[in-house]
Picture 1 (cartoon, rainbow, N blue to C red):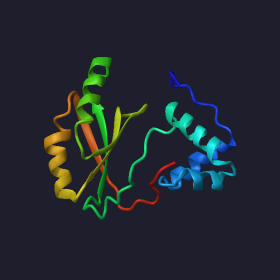
Picture 2: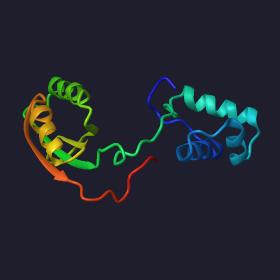
Picture 3: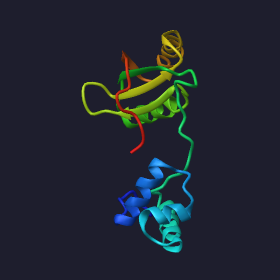
Length: 155
């Protein structure tokens, strides 16, 4: 699709998306079997879902704890300036910090919420001091350390 409007998805499209969300390495033949279509229409639907951007890509899901990244902190950021140029400068800069796993602009008492993943509290403290505090237009930040992930994962 050329715009950001949602694609109209039927039950077969939704079945394809559900199956691939759970198991992204399915062959087209196995995917077709699971959704109850033959291989050719399944392949055509899959290609359309990729071309329209409903499926944005395929990748391995990694276990951050096994990778030594067990520490998760959520950081509220309040900016000194929320004009468009300041927001864009912040957005560009925060995208360059690999420890920032997610960044969301928020409507509320602060401007951004970041999910930051590091090895431990000492590594987080360094990221906060060296990288997050250096982001443009920062007025204040508040950190909340996650004790346990109750639910995480894809759609």
